[in-house]
Amino acid sequence: MRDHLRLLINGREHEVRGRDVFATLANWLRARGATGTKIVCEEGDCGACTVLIRRGETFLPVNSCIQSMFQLDGASIVTVEGLGMNAVQQSMVAHHGAQCGYCTPGFVVAMTAMFETRDRVDEPCARAELVGNLCRCTGYEPIIKAACAVESVSMRRMHEVYPQTIDDEQPVLIEDEGRTFFAPMTLDDALTFKRKFKPCTIVQGATDVGVWINKRAYSVAAMLSLSKIAELRDLREDDGAIVAGANVSLTELESFTRDRIPELHRILNIFGSAQIKNAGTLAGNIANGSPIGDTLPYLMVAGAMLEIASVDGTRLVDINQFYKGYKQFDLAPHEIIVRVRVPIVRDTLKLYKVSRRRDLDISAFTAAIRLSTTDGHINAAAIAYGGVAPTVLRLKNTESFLAGKPVSADTFEAAGRIARDEIAPISDVRGSRDYRLQLAENIMCKFYYDVIA
Image (cartoon, rainbow, N blue to C red; front, side):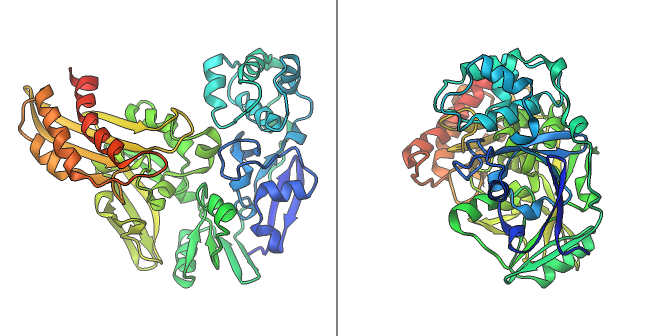
């Protein structure tokens, strides 16, 4: 059992102890001279703080402003200083990809990550992979041109530049100023810790917890990481469902659903930036319980099952029974979501995400509509809306109305009116109550014309 962290920064090993364990990676780096890592939003939105963190043989971009040091035991991290004057930086100079330069280090790091897994970058790829990096000066075109002009043969993979690794096969327990952090190697040890310490926050991707720490001065006496527990990295197809362990990232899930659940893959593609998806997990998205969580409508209409464990044993919970109210769950303080079983829906299915921007934006409204039909009539419907209530909501009245009805525009227009009456949205910065009511009605008609007509 270690009482400190061990990690690599640009190939050099560091030990982190005491209060530094609870700092953000961005602040820790800057305090030690790695000032190329910029801090702007501290929410994981702008990408100026992007660093590379090794996952297996590949270095992936992650927002360092919402990564706490205690998440990084055993990690190998590369900052912009560790890249040297590589072909990406040379191309940025040649194509005038920087003006004020504040966002430039984040862009350079994210662009370097593109060449970790591919030999060539074209414009669609560059635009997709740079969604998580914002620039207020260049209009992006010079940056995109710079990315596309890089000669991949001149780019060395980061695992070749920094082949060093740290043996992290050891649990970590750190106590400082009334705070305790634990990263166990086994699920049993994690469950014992969760039973002992209340309250206890699980920090996996921490893409929300990191924002709370920065913007709400969030602090809790005990924090638990599951990242060292190998059995929770499981990702497989099993009897018509995808089984995803609590450590499976949204990036990994997105790749795995590409051919298995194309609609869910499409939504995951615009779920957030690469930096967010490389850190965030499906289990974390579920446990956060946001009423506009983008994965939740599909999980509800598919009938996903949550495997919940404690020292007393394991139980299965239908996700439709999991949410009891806003941020209220069928989850005891000593329990952990360890796996999610996601059925592969083969019925007619459409998912919707409505937001002001297509990419890197929080939803104002989400929906999943699943339909089973025979001979022009509806056998059964499953409908879930997000952004219209304190939790993502199944529309039972609308589902009952649709059962047995003919598949027609009139049917879905009527269903839209019923859906409107089933919800009670509020007005907020993302949309008014009336706007969401109209969306709830219109989306049923849109589904008909998108999928059926």
